[in-house]
Structures are given as C-alpha cells and as structure tokens.
Image (cartoon, rainbow, N blue to C red; front, side, top):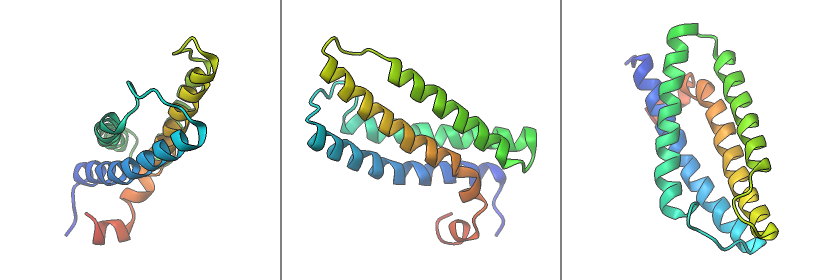
Length: 139
C-alpha cells in the first residue's frame, strides 16, 4: 500500500527520533562518565527524550514542506540540514554557559556531540523515507 508523502516524512522523522533518543542517551552517559561533566539542569534524560523526538518529528515536517516546494530533489534538504548543523555547531563552540572554563568546555562537548548526532540523522531522513526496507518493515 502506498503511503502519502506526509505520512512517510513524519513517520520517518519519528522513527529516526526514537533511534536518536537511544543514541543521544548513550552518548550522554558515556560522555559524562569519560569527561566527569556533572551539571544536568539543561541536558538530562527527560529533556533528551522529549526534545530529540519532537525535534526530529518537526524535521520530518520540514522535509515534507521541502518535498512540496522542490519535488524529489532531496539534496536541497540535505544541504540545508548540513549547513544548519554546521552553523549551530559553530554557535555551540562559541557559547559560554558557565563561568568555569572546565565546566563550560564539558557543556560544549556534550551539546556539540548531541547536535552532530541529530544533524547526521536529520540529513539521512530523505534517504530513509525513500527506503523500501523502512517502508516495508517500519512504516
């Protein structure tokens, strides 16, 4: 059965969001264990679970809008996401959340890693939404 482009884009975003939640939680635990970074007011288990899923669901919606405006030119969406990720990563690297230099570096490492995970996954949404394997077994 053929699904609508809206359904495929949204469900692919949701599927990628669920997978990314697990990856980001694993990265969060590993990064904190390795670096010793402690503060968890902004980036914690609850915020990762909700934010990652909602963000990638919204990126699925953005992908649907790109399909409507540009057709099947997925490279435009991928370029947009890569440029957005690079811009946001640069902003994270320039940010100063804490006055303590070591804690600030830890925060930038944690947030930067999560941002890169989300950026790579978001850039893969067009390829995953067109995947026959994903359509057959997941959607």
